[in-house]
View 1: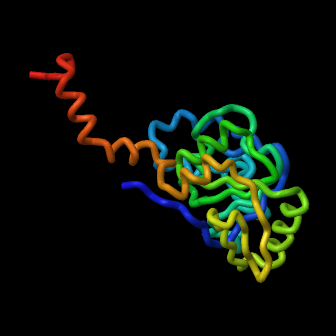
View 2: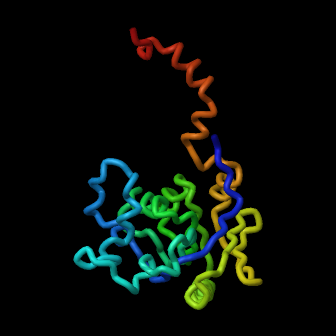
View 3: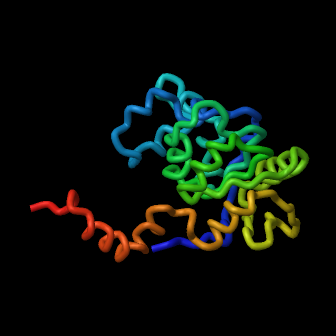
Length: 200
């Protein structure tokens, strides 16, 4: 079943450094995972843990940001290797949207294919959002894909999102598997005509 995404609502976790690459997000050590089911546990692992002990001041370890659905990031987020494990780790951790100054394009596409919304705002707006989250972690944000805006605490910020990607979220066509399954009758029709798919 196709999932339409019109908005993401929730609290945010701030990590506004520029140039966070896919090896920062998910270290290469964890690429050996056979499935993605536990991969959210390893998000920013080498930053969050030292000798298996949590680093108290890392934003993903702070209690006030637990359960946040939105990540506030910096410029060129997701650069480096195009591994899909990095957006998988974010999604499995519970991140549903990323607000950054800019994204590495392959990373942004991989996020979109998982239903993770990535929107771009100015550097000044990243600073503004980061200050808001740090001063008031309980702030609820509303990322509205129809209005192309982020609302919080009586304020509104406009964001950029490639139109094709925005429409895919609004129409539910971002999920390639769901779109394919919707055409199951046509798949069966083609399969019935192909002799090499007829197993006895």
